[in-house]
Amino acid sequence: MTVGETAIRGRALRRLWGNPLGKVGGGLLLIVLVVGVFAPLLAPYGPAEVHFVTPFQRPFTVGFALGTDDLGRDILSRVLYGTRASLEVGALAVACAVAFGVPMGLLAGYWRWLDLVLSRVADVLLAFPFIMIAVGLTAIYGGGLTQAAVALGVAQVPVMMRVVRAETLRLRETDFVLAARAANVGHARILREHILPNALGPIIVQATVIMPTAVLGEAILSFLGLGITPPAPSLGIMLSDAQQTLLRTPWPGIFPGLMLLLICLGFNLFGDALRDALDPKTSR
Image 1: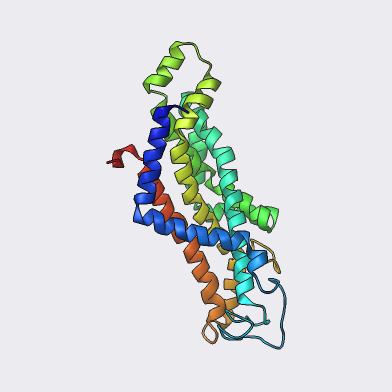
Image 2: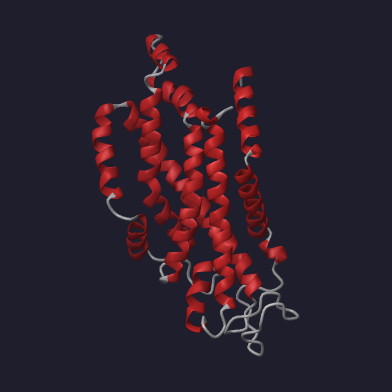
């Protein structure tokens, strides 16, 4: 890493942490990550542990901090494990979108003849809402954490591809790429060493957009019975179970809904701050 690259990254980090929205988003993400990673240590009960003698316990009851649901299951434990499952699905969906979308975007942006094919495929997929694609894939291949994550990731591949394609089209006309071509540097090396490293900023920012989208998508799929299979914990399953008694006992639906709000708000705020920090036009 050169001195210039170090200075640029240092300025980007200072702009990121100097942004109030970045601090709030980063704090929320830290809380969510701690909750998800350490769920087995923080949860007082197992996520599927049933207490038939204590159904619908109110929040802040002794032994049940957030109350219990209709089967007497501890809501706090299920929210903690459901957060863990949501983060796993989001991370796998981002990995899938990056693994397929980034190479496709690089190829489409660098070679115009491939662009004609790949962009048309992406346009067809973008014509459908991503949740429709995810629902169709899970209906075909079945539910489960991995299947839901892959379906949501595949649905986000066209979006990631378009972002990388646009950045590649810009970078392929820059002086350092043109100089590499004049020096007879191979196309694969240009893509690997010159274009991809300079496109990492938009890729990372797009990943922070895909993550909350995948988390919400998993909740929708689980709510519809196409995502994570019970009795495995899921925030979407908790919302689906709570809708039957929402007016009489709202807390089984309030707490998983609040956790979904925190996850999406944290990633969106942090992603916006990260985009501003990596954009040279916003530098002061």
